[in-house]
Each structure stands twice: as structure tokens, then as C-alpha cells.
Length: 329
Image 1 (cartoon, rainbow, N blue to C red):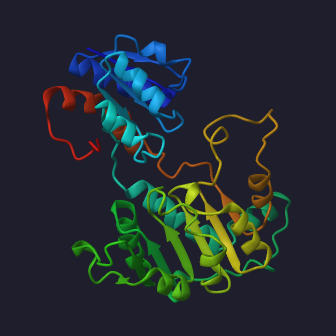
Image 2 (cartoon, one colour):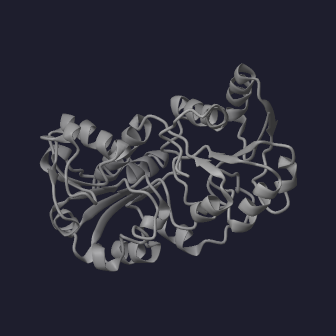
């Protein structure tokens, strides 16, 4: 039984090989993404595994089905790169990866602190032997209200970690009820209430049609002056043009972004010698109160091991008929 794995990073290879050997699976590893040109490399495979840069549209999924491929295992938690309706039509099973939420949650807390304590400017000054304090006065979390949008695994873990800081925590989700394990840790409220009352707002929801650009000019105007916005989820949740306007007018006090709109083709690649065609990204990163990292909140040894292993193990689960919480089609 063969598995064709695309977009395989060096840090995944040995993990996937060991997992495949354990289950007696023949593994075909490719660094390229799955597309119209590389799809032929999956010939003879039972399943395929990808990361998020491969766009599994209707055409790709139809061709996979014609080749006899029965399942897709994405080594990401997000599935917005897969046409799920087309997968249902083609009767191709789709699995997502899962990993403990601690890494992203801890990274979120780090970005909040970096934004509140003016880390970017402090670092820049120190590199130039400027050790002045003017303009670097920070704020303490215990005196602030933090709004958490999304109370799933990662959002819930962020709420739990925030308990140690003594801040007031507001939470919003579509169900308008706080999960049992979070009771007493946060106050559930409407989105408008969260916008109006929060000093810091952090996003932990998936990318869907409903959440696309949920942070836009209209939403920003409902927020406190000087609000700090943090995004370790998906770039499409925020309109970058409206973020820029919010920074320029000083409505937004600081931004901390691990993801950004239109990051495909830039993040997770070495582009040092290239001309980057993304003016909004180049412009927003130059502000002194904008901290940006390269979509790396997930990137820990534990998470990579879980994600890489899942690309192989989900095929085993499918073949053996084992129920999996990660199967979405």
C-alpha cells in the first residue's frame, strides 16, 4: 500500500519514514506541492498527504479519484485549501491533522506580551546601542481585559493560561455558551461587547466564508482606542487594508501577527534574494507597533511530530475502518 506525500519538509521526513515502516506502508516523499503538474507522481498510491500550499480543487480531486486514490490526509489543522464539497462528490475521504493546542496558545501569549511591552522597538534600539526608555512604557496584563474570539482547543488553552496573569477575560463563540472546562475562567459575551470592552483581542477561529475579514473597518471602529489585536489563526480573518488604516489613525495601538492575508508564496520559504510582490505586507511591517512572525506559532517539536505522523496514520485508520475524530469527509 502506497502513500504519496507532498510538500514534505526536512523536519518531517524521518518522522514519516518511521511511521510508514511501523505500519508497512510504502512512502513516496515529494518536496513539491500537489498540483496539475505533479499529480502524476501519485500514480499507484492509495492515498495522498499534503500541507496547506497544495490547493485541492475539484479538478485535482477528480483526477485523484480517477487514479484510484481514496483518501487525503492534510498535515494541517486548517482545511481551507481543500474543496470539501468536491471531495464528497468524488467520495474521497478527507482527514485533518491534530496536535495539542499548547504551542499556539503559548505563542499567542508571547505575542500579546511583545505588543504590550514594545519589544520590537526595544530590540531595534538595542541593536543600535540606543538604550533609552522614552516611548517604551508598557502595560501589565493584570490591569487589562482580554477578549478571546473562539473557545475551541487553542482559544480555550489561551483562556486557561491567562488565568495566571490575573486579567479579566471575555470570550465569544458561535454557541454563545462557555465550554464546561472554562466555566469561571471567562465571561461569555456578544462579539460587539467583546469589541467594545477588550484592551487586547486575540483570534482563534477557522477560515470560513463567515469569518472572512471579520476584522474590518466596521469591526475596528467598535473597539477601544489603542486596542491590541493578535492573530495566530488565519490571515483571511483580517482585512489588511483596514488594519493599515487602523494603525495610521492610531485607532489600533498595536498588532501582533503570525499570519497575514496573501502570505502564500512568501511564508515558509527563503525569499531573501527575491522581489516580493505584496505591497500591503511590506508597508504594514514597517510600523513600529506591528510585530510579525512567519506563520510559526504551530512550529514545535511536539506539534511537528503529531502532524507528520498523522499524514501516515490517518491512511491506516481509513483502511482498517477505525473511527477518527480527524475525519471530516
